[in-house]
Image (cartoon, rainbow, N blue to C red; front, side, top):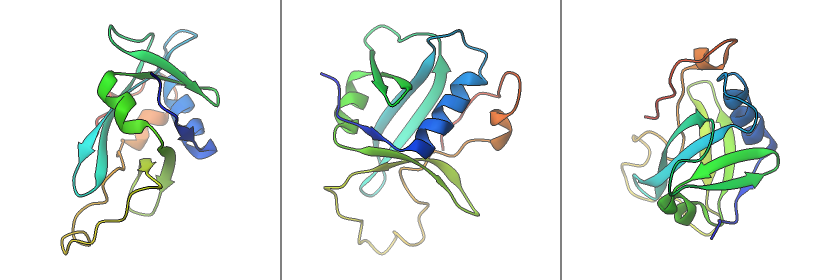
Length: 134
């Protein structure tokens, strides 16, 4: 079963740009692996790919092609994927409207969870450097 996912226009632009500049053929998409991470957040890894791998399913939302494994499909159900850019970080953010923000004392000192950082140089012309999630 495919998840019910909302992708904001900013996230769609970011994802499509990664795929477009990857040099992949038409029909390529983004392999997105989402796992629980940190204090009520999500961690993700992603890479542009020509087609889904064995066990993955294709999810098309708003012109974005995502290749999702079983765990990612479960984790993404009901979420909104957004692109966040601040003075100190940028990346995909996963927003769960049914989850409360973390109230632990380490939340202020810890990096914000759910945001995948990428090297901005990977969104240039030509083949980008590998995308690495932190």
